[in-house]
Image (cartoon, rainbow, N blue to C red; front, side, top):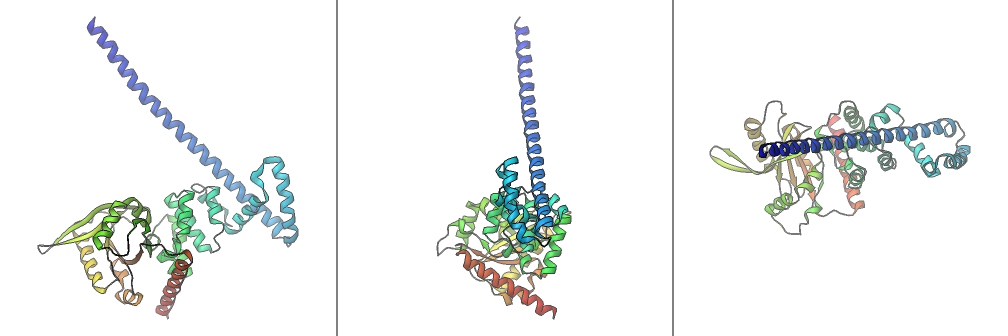
Length: 356
C-alpha cells in the first residue's frame, strides 16, 4: 500500500512538473505571437502613413498647386477624422507629408519599419540634416533603440560627437550606405568625442583612481555612454613585460567590431607619451589576449583635454588609437553645440588641406 501511494505521489509530481513547463512554453508562444502581431501592425501603419504622405505630396503639393494643396489638407483631414478617427488630424497629415519628403525611398522605409515605429519617425522628422537623420535612423535600426533612447541620443548630440560627422559629406554618406546595406559598423560610427560622464557626479578635484572608481560604480551608465556592443572584461588589467608589471585601466570587448578595446583614463590634457604607453598595451594584447577570428585590439584614451595638431602629427589612427575628451559636467546645449560645430569645421578643413 505504501509503495502504491508513493508511486501515485511521484506520478502527480511528474505531471505537475510537465504541466508547469507546458504552461511556461505556452506563455512564451503567446507573448511571441502577440509581439509579432504588434510589430506587423506597426510596420503596416507606418508604411500606410508614408504612402499617404507620398500620395498627397505628389498629387497636390508638387503639382504646382502648393497653395491650393495647403488649404485642401485641412479638408482631407476633416473627412478622414469622420471616417477613421483622430489619427488623421491635420497635424498628423503634415507629419506624413514630411515623412515622405525626408525619406523619399520606399525601399529604405520598408527596411527601417522592421525596427522603427511611427513614434521613432516623429523624433527623426525635425532633423533637417539628411546625413544626421540617416545616421540616427540606421543606428536606431542596428542597435534596437526605443524612442526614449533615440530622443536621448539626439539631445546629447551623438552624431556631432562621432568621427563620422567630421568627415567630408561624400565619405560620410558612403559609410551610412554601407551600414544600411551590410549592417557594417566602423570605429568612426562607434567612438565619439567628447564622452559625457556627468552621471559620475565628480567634483572639481579628483584623482584618476576616483574617476575609475566612479566608472565602476556606474558601469551600466558608462556602457550606455560608450554605446551598444561593449562588454566589460577587466579593471586594472595586469600586463607583465620584462618582469615589470603595468596596469591597463579598463579592458572591453566590442561584439560588432570583434576586437578588444583598451581604455586609459587621464586627468589632464593628452600628451604624446600617452601614445607610446597605449601602443605597448595594444601590442601585448595582440600577442597574448587576441583570439582566433578577432580583429587587432584598439585603444581609447579618455582625457580632460587635447590639442588637435599634436594628435594629427602623431597619426594615432594608424596605431588604432582614438583620443577623446570627457565631460564630467554637461555644459548648456548651445555651448556644446557651438564647440562641436567648431570641431567639425576644423576637422573637415584639415582633411581638405591634406588632400590639397
